[in-house]
Image (cartoon, rainbow, N blue to C red):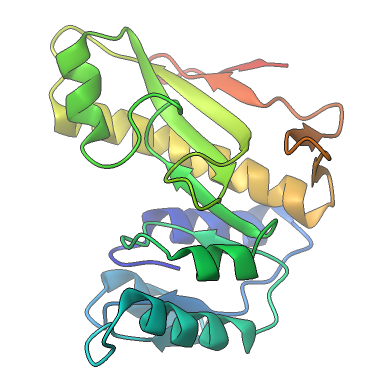
Length: 213
């Protein structure tokens, strides 16, 4: 599910092809007909659908229609890849345990928007991204994996965003592979369990990556 260029969506599609994951993208869904990622998806031969919020009286009504649209494709997982709407509790609960998001910060730090500005303003030395299951708590669901990048003294929000985006593309693709292989599950306490052998955190300094078990 995307709202814009869908660079993470593109990274996931590319990873399926290049890394041989046992996975298929059954559809790309957007709330914006002008989203550039839709054209890219169509050029790859993927099914695309658009459901605009205009015409729905409430967020809940729109999300009910959106959930019905998504369910028609019978997905094992619904991956949010820059879908810029806060989903209602009803939508989240309908896809509980199979709704996954990537957020551009090391949650629980900096939920919401303008994460890179917040990271620079607060003076943190490390920033990054988080892939997590979605719950009704905004950016508060169980964490699957994280990637870490340094914050440099001369960083601007845009420069830092680009560094984080490289980490996002790698991390989300890795998690997709784990999901496709059935290596991720939620415990009865709501914590994520990933089978041994899958590093759940990466440190990515200046063009180099190091995994942390």
